[in-house]
Image (cartoon, rainbow, N blue to C red; front, side, top):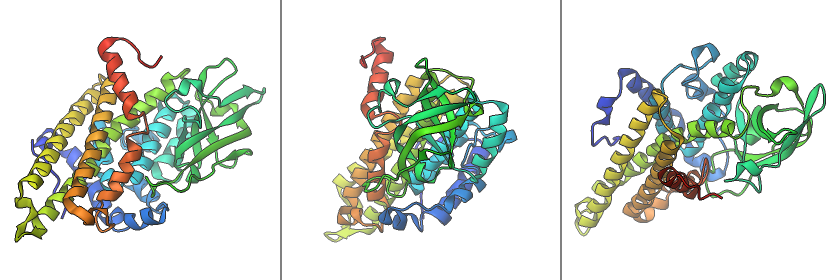
Length: 388
């Protein structure tokens, strides 16, 4: 039985609605994700049947207004949903994170009313799944150097280029793609499955996020209707605003992986006996568990406060970067320490720890690498950019 750590009684800072939302998603993860996810990860396949269920529990676009199919919840509710989904697996949280922050959010924030009504309800329900095209084969941390571009052909745009490491790409019905117009300005454009010249090759042989569908977005003279351009944003502010939302969700999400690993380590330490007594009685094991709980508690307080600031529209991109970087690193260290507590059993599929550890090796890189987020904080401290 899962016993979520809450050493500083953070639950007292949550509303009844927050707890109801969390419990609903937690029950779904216990019922639908945890019994099957290891098999899917071992086989390097994605449980597509869970997409509609995620729509039913409100995991897609929870902060999007109800008018467009969302639940109209606050940012803390969104964070709690991400925590519970990642407790199941980073692949499940990644699908919901991309769908919510990187696909639905830009359409809601930067799109037309017609675009909102056309796409958002389908995405919220899970009828459609979306992808987000920013990273390119040669341009990751430097998106401003992207090569993907489109030309105005009178009654349509002609899109060319490619994107890489794209979550949901192989199963996507549509994608929000960031590309340069003829003036070199970065713009968002919606590309739909079935458009001639649009393909989504699968990325194979991953050691991490094995239950997540990853691929490329390739555009070979794709004719895109002019009505698919997001009109209300120009420049890198568009994709970076989306990434802020995604990074915020990740900062909450990885707590789920950390808490699951910690809980497994505590239970194992109490049950496993060596030298005639539980290994939990040994000082070195208690040190590991105490340090894990301390770091989880700090991370919980960090995202709760960040959630309050997000609700008040006061959270800065640099504050979000700090939380993403800290909490992913914390989760990865906890996964590694938990694996040590379990010894050889820690690598077994009977426990979730090694799967979480491998997943977090991707999470520490995507949506801004660990080092890039460190430099964002450094720039905020000094006012000097170390990127250039």
